[in-house]
Length: 144
Image (cartoon, rainbow, N blue to C red; front, top):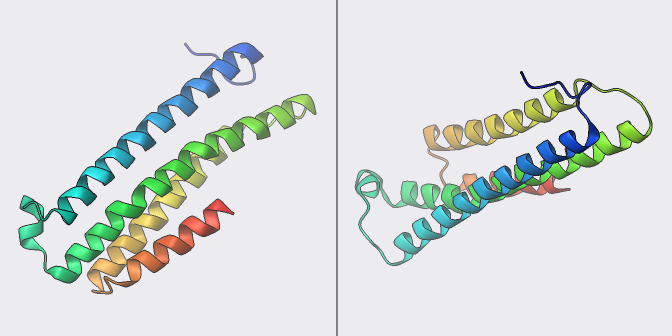
């Protein structure tokens, strides 16, 4: 079994954190690449099977979602760095915080659920043009 954070050595914990950061950055870069490919397809008007079912406003909504989703994933990746610094601070202050990892995961899940809820609501309410504004506000708030 894998040791918990309390029983793990600092070197092992640091290696786990480094692996998590690299994995998050890999996923974020893959999402960014897929987003750029999709944006290129939109600009070059390459026929995609999904786009035939959407009208012009819905295609704009999908384009906004595809363009802004990588920023949310990058924020999630860089939250690993914040987690690392928080763990480092509390380790040097000799304050055990066993729920810090759980808090990190829960906050990230909550952010993704918020983005998904806004995307679904703007689509179902046919407020397609509002998605970009709401996503920029969320990304700006999380980036601050």
